[in-house]
Image: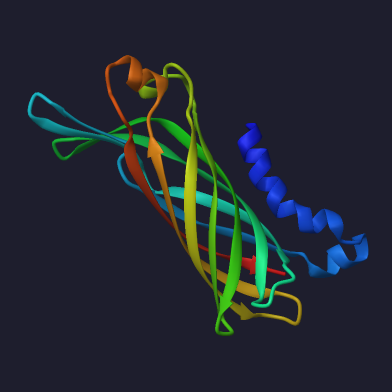
Length: 204
């Protein structure tokens, strides 16, 4: 990961480093979730009068979040999350869909979370996203991009046991997409990509 990504993660981890090991263990919350991610087109073009879109299909997604309470007047948490989605890159043209290659995304974000009532939790953050293709092809011929990412999530938590909680998540991500290959082919600017993730898991 780049220095920017490590810097974002560092801001989240500072409160953890300053705390004693015993206090750290008792205060840190860990959440694991499984779900699915929908992503809008990363590349849109017109070829011979026909619209062509390149986008991932709906992708199975794993998320792991670590949170630590901050000493603020309003109860807030510092949060770091790793999200991995594995799916298929698809080309859509004239109503037909063709699978191009397997495609994975890795998003690392740092943010702030707070409660809304007793069962709802809001989180907002920033970070970086990386794409991993099974082979260098198409728009990824000159390597995979590393893109800045903004994220916001609404989470429902309900106690399951004295130490475990049910976690149901709705997450929205926003980032711009371009690659060196697209730029080499004369594409200027970048395309805004929207991602929506739903997930269910357990928090402790």
